[in-house]
Amino acid sequence: MLSRRSTVLFVVAMATSALVPGCGREPRERLQGKWRGIGIEGLMGEQESKADGWAKGTRLEFTGNKVTVTMPAESPRSGTFRVAQADGEKLKVQFKRPEGGEDLADFKFEKDGTLRWIVGNAQVVMTKAVN
Image 1 (tube, rainbow, N blue to C red):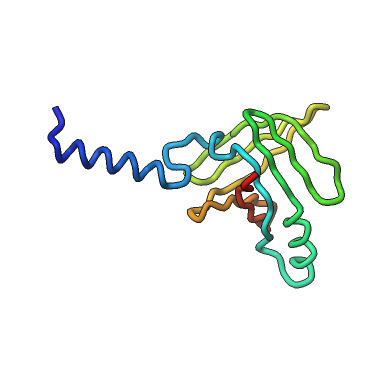
Image 2: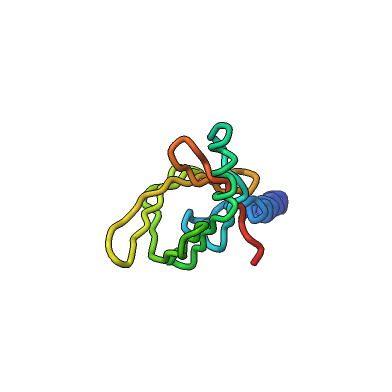
């Protein structure tokens, strides 16, 4: 039987873990919702300024095992996804296109609540959209 002190510590630990983003949640659950690009990092000069506008127009929406990817100057694309690999805050996500084919993408959850979509040497920085 737990002592009163142990019970209090357990309750505090559980309450605290609920406040830490992603703590105790499966990687697929952490992706759920709408994500919007807020910028890009890892490029230089004019290349970065052009890509930054593209990144800010990029959206990802994860609902269950469905995903919709919206990028500037392109029609939204939908399909299914699965987390192919999870290593701490890093994920490798497999996207399956309805017409066939699949793509792998690397993501990383940051402590500040942002999500980084790693594309080569660049990272599209994304934040969870409110609605």
